[in-house]
Image 1: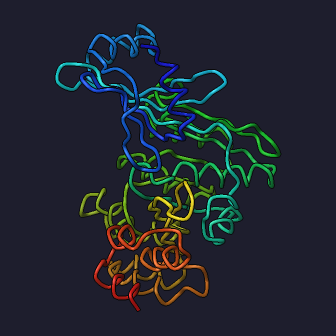
Image 2 (image 1 turned 120 degrees about the horizontal axis):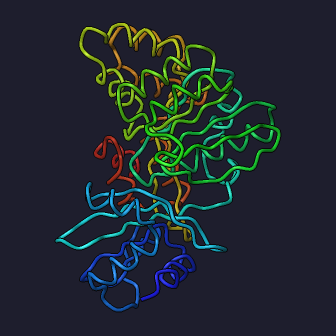
Length: 351
């Protein structure tokens, strides 16, 4: 069975992901729906042959030792893929996510206008959060490209793996990939700060060391962009603080209050008005009131500040979902299912 033919068929169908699992036909995800492809059932030998087609020998040894491997794969003239190889029921499984090579402009992503304003920030920490597959990487790439077209600055990205590839326009852009160009995010970030950057993109703040370095970089005058797997703004702040030992949490609250500029939390929906996806976006901007709440460990009050600050660009997740529903973009069932407060939103949608 030819791997590139499967990927080409999935690409033409508009699939975001392809899953190759022994004992099943290839499966693709189109607009968040898992759809079997009209192909024969994969054997364990098929899955291994596809894996070996994509991965050089030294990486295969790492895979056999760790039983999991993340890497990228490119079908020339078609697309690049972020791939996870793993074992399931003693056979290799492959999860492949398509990486679009052309960075979409911010104006085409159905994002709030305030996101474009964040690209004018001179320094500080901006976090884009959400579940896997919620469009975080696309939003960050569009923000980087907007700055690339406007400024004469030095941008360094630290990614796992490199997804969108940038061509230096007015900015000088360097892209470093975990594993190939650096051993860890923390190591890459530590050394990036000695490479004269103005803007640093950290693919994910996965651990305490990376998080501490990112906050320190923001404190020292850099603009730092990164992601977390959290679903809303207040949870994002608490997740960062909880990474630290109890004795350091007051100090990190103060540092975070000084450096955090915005939290953008995304949830993707299947559109009902036309094929495609659309994001609901919760946006927190760090006003003096928000900074005080972070310092004083009153992050539970952040949702109230978001609700009362729509005039300056803040928006709660449920308000964003309601707007999509009233604009005819998403179904009521999807809107209520993904809401932060389903009962309250359902009453609002009926009204």
